[in-house]
Amino acid sequence: MGFVHALNNHGSCVYISDWDATALSLLWIGFFVGLVVTAAIAPKTVIKTFILPLPGTPPGLAYAGGPARANVVSFSWNRKAIFAGSLLVGWALIWLAGAAMVDLAVSHGLVLTYF
Image (cartoon, rainbow, N blue to C red):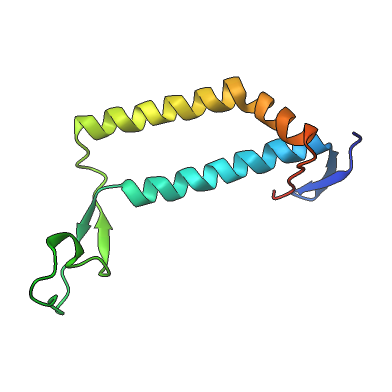
C-alpha cells in the first residue's frame, strides 16, 4: 500500500495511502450524516402560510411542506443532554473504533476516495 491517492489542499499536492483515503472518506461521510440528522431533529418553529390545510388534516402534517425557522435557542435540558450524549458517543466511536473500522474496510478491498 503505497502513497497513490493525490490530496490537493491549498495548492500543495500530497499523496496518501489507501488507508488514509478511506479514513478521510469515512470521516467526511460521518460528518455529512451528522449534519443532516442534526438539521432534521433540531426544533423548528413553523412559519404559518396563507394556504390553510384541508379539514381533517392531522396537526403534525398541517404545515409539513411550509417554511420553518430553526429554534435552537429554546433547547430543553433533555435535548441538551441527548445532544451532548450523542456528541460523546460519536467522538468515542471515531476515537476508539475508527481505526478498526478502516482496517476492516481496507482489508476487504473497500477503498473510498470521496474527499
